[in-house]
Length: 143
Image (tube, rainbow, N blue to C red; front, top):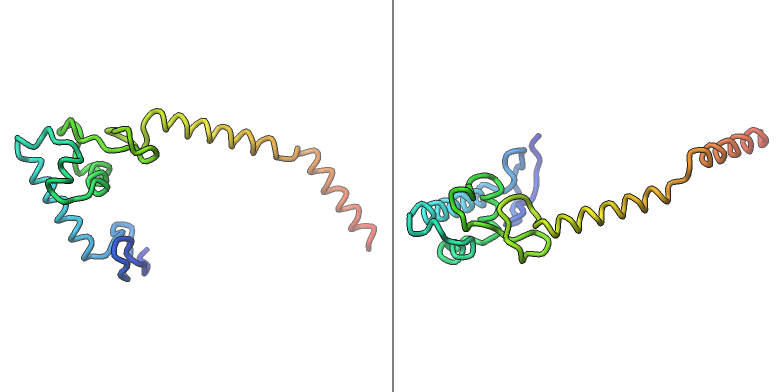
């Protein structure tokens, strides 16, 4: 369903839909950026470029080029040096997903630890039932 929203790139008000996440002027800018990157990479001599070289030569941000890769508009398999930085550490270059393997492992361990902590703090069902029965009894006595 369409709704009014502010464009996350420029702040203008626009009608947001499930297919359009930015205003039409920013969408045109994104498409122009894609065309610049695509034209650059189509040239045989540029196919071995890294994401940083592509960014420097086209003026398109690394973040935007990364988004093109994630959307599947640029296939990393066609351009072997087009790895992008891990979202967590920003140092390791990856070719798929959002996190490098070491950051992924850290996030999984953290999630497991948090889950254990949640499990430890949950009151047991029998204790909860006893509490509810006591409250029922208290209510019955007051009437």
